[in-house]
Length: 198
Image 1 (spheres, rainbow, N blue to C red):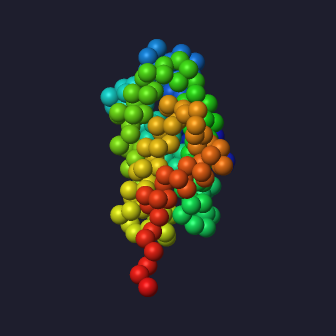
Image 2 (cartoon, helix red, strand yellow):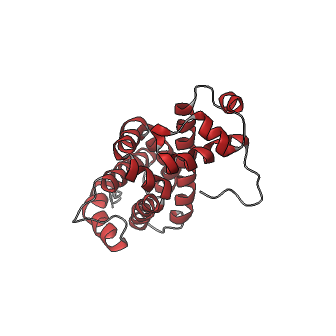
Image 3 (cartoon, rainbow, N blue to C red):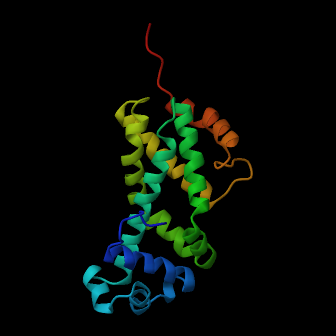
């Protein structure tokens, strides 16, 4: 992801960006702290000072940063949806295509698919769901009560990840028409607000 224009990257960001470059080059397992330090242009000691605990801690920080950035960008694309159906379709389409456009994720999937799936499905899923819920509950809350809005955010997160990692021949959540059909058939019947009593 590109840095914010006009804002100098912090030392932490330089380390996280270096991790991305090194992982794309060699794969996560082969990257060392020395590689990251050299790519970031800082000393090994500085890397450890910034991220006590080494490579795993850096990778966790990297995943956390990228997840936040992903949802901030996604939020910008879906915030203008007029109704619940349009909101759900926008989330499904933009989230799916955002994952597909992520060059780093694609590189890691090509070189270490099992590690990525393990990280995304086991280690990172609770954090991803928490971040998604934080971002999307307020959007859904204009159409649903707060509890249902949170349930919808979690459901859509799990749905996107499931279809991304195990694509279907019947449903393409990155295609607006397919996502809308899926939403009308399966999502809205479960989450549409109940009509008010006369």
